[in-house]
Length: 83
Image (cartoon, rainbow, N blue to C red; front, side, top):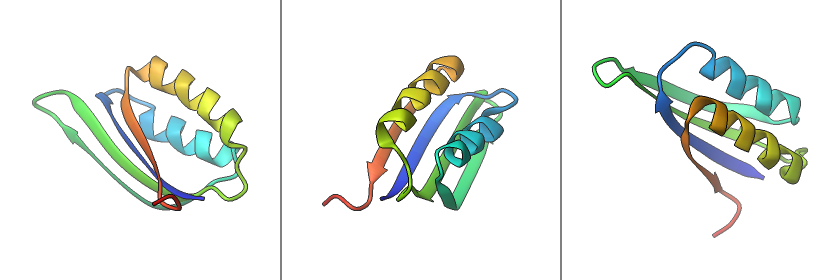
């Protein structure tokens, strides 16, 4: 499964590290990542494209929900293999 994770949330320390660790923990390989912060609005935005062929999607989704809650994220996961 190739997928893209899009997130936005209030900016704070640890977001990039947490998302990277989450993907690593579940066996994903990050293919591309872009991020930026809107300093005036205090918002963080990131797009991570990854290869998740070896992932247990159910376990990943459960941990992702925990991260989303912790950082008050808006998010969308797009599975590139599905039309």
